[in-house]
Image 1: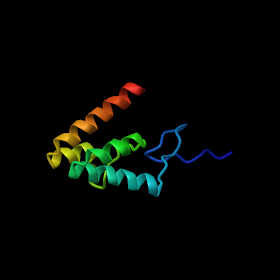
Image 2: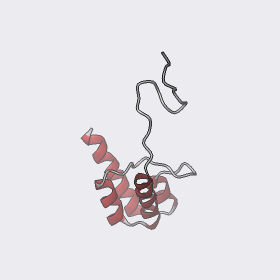
Image 3: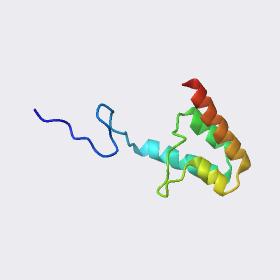
Image 4: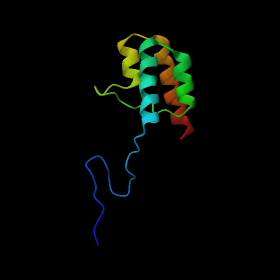
Length: 89
C-alpha cells in the first residue's frame, strides 16, 4: 500500500490548498482595491469570503498594500473585516 505524497506546504491529514482562477482573480481585486482605497469593493469582496491574508507574488497582503499606499480608510476597513472574521470563528 502506498502512502499519499505530502508536499512541504501540506501536512498529513490536511487537504491540499485549492487554487481556482476565480479565487485568484478576487484576491487580486482585493489587493487592487486596497491600493486605490476603494472600500466599497473591499467590503463586497469580504462579504464574498475572499481570503484577507492572500498574498501577491511579493508576499504582500491587501493590508500591506493599503499601508504602503497610505490608504487610511482601506486600512480601517481591512482591519475591521479581519476582526469580524476572528470574532465569527
